[in-house]
Length: 165
Image (cartoon, rainbow, N blue to C red; front, side):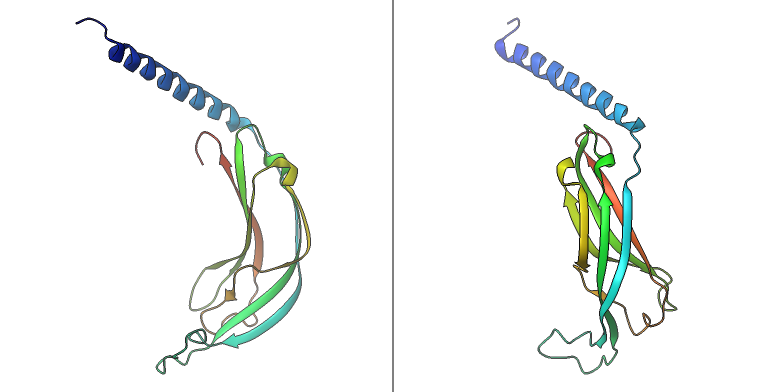
């Protein structure tokens, strides 16, 4: 029977996929030494709205057994962010977000994502927004947000082309 075309094709495919995997592993290892410190400036310009809302307000038929009211805040940020140092040959995209962190008696740790964006090119990695409003609703469970110290954090995650996330 010998070496048929299918056996030769299988050998070639196995060799090619093994070589490609080895090159991807070696390439992702070279990116381990890439370190960068992006320039970040975030400031809360104003609280545009702070009001109590009913958890069932969006429903047509409100539940009568839950009379709890929740705090909702709408914020206005100034954001300057230079993500260009995070880009390397192995960067596919960067996910960036603004998070609010605070503590209450009801929940020891509260983290709420207020805004996010995905940057896919180095040419678009310089963000300069004067009036960013929260993209997602900032709602606390109950009226525990009033008078709390809230820490606003800019977080980012680099998604590589090859290698560990």
